[in-house]
Length: 240
Image (cartoon, rainbow, N blue to C red; front, side, top):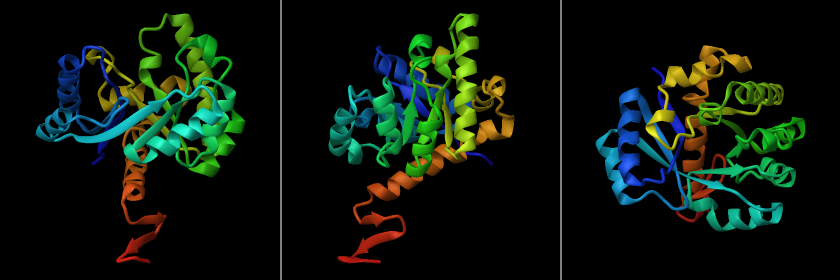
């Protein structure tokens, strides 16, 4: 049995009036976990709601740094406050820095065709991300609602990005990126959106289950107060 997770629900502008039905819909669709992106840790209200729905809640923040230096400064301040740290790569300098920084979990690229044509997940970023164990994220909401010509061109770019990730063994995560119920999709429907970029059904389902859960579990281990290095923890003052 797969355990599905939508690693990117955006905090809606309507607040809890829209987020609550989104969480209920996620549970009805068969998701076991969700990550809600905001600038602060999830509130007690959201945590209680997820608990009632039997949804595992993951804290996530999306950073939009103006420069590589801005990114490193922000990571020092916020890394240990969130289970998932994603970076919106709006410039090549930020994309390269994010890809090589082991404190970054997900690389996210713009849904704007003009921006994505200039800054996308290229071979150099794939090489850096592979070394830092950083993942590349596809958000379905980037494609939904676009006019057909724009959607087709975005799919062409995403296909190249997926090929770069595959070639350099970079994990790929697929999320809804939804900020409303209209943009949410059940797991198999989300995976089916990847067919035009050459991703098969089983591979797509891995990108919504085992791959994102692996990232979450690894980060939870790192956030443990006794963590030193992978496989090394401090127990009663001694590393073991």
